[in-house]
Amino acid sequence: MHPARRDDVTKQSFEALSEFRYQLRRFLRFSEVAARAEGITLLQYLLLLHIKGFPGRDWATIGELAERLQAAPNGVVALVSRCEAAGLVIRLQNEADHRQVEVHLSERGERCLARLAALHKSELKLLGSVFSVSKLARAP
Image (cartoon, rainbow, N blue to C red):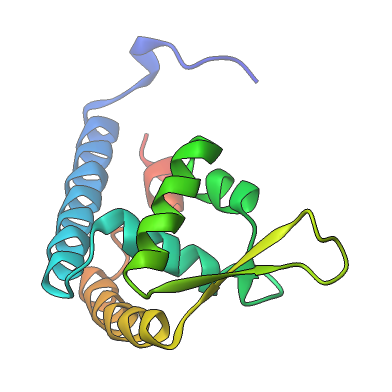
């Protein structure tokens, strides 16, 4: 694969990229406001989402959450501690490997995430196909 040259990018491509970034920022702003209205930060919401949405199970490790959040593990430990103090998550020792800590949603965390997920699902429906990456790739 060769890197794109500047002259390979058309006005239509710039418009498609601009629209995508605009709609993405609008969605992220919506997410920030919704999380604040629920009484949590955007990062707390994302942590809850990545715990519940982790493939194949309803918990995740600090390392897995750090990857999902694209954050340093020590920062995720601090975030988990804040969420634990707020009653949103609980930490459990893994039964098979006692060195591993599982981060689970608490009942409060589950309720908070369910409300926010419903709002986000509705907002995504309004956006329709804006987030179709193939739409951007097709732009000449």
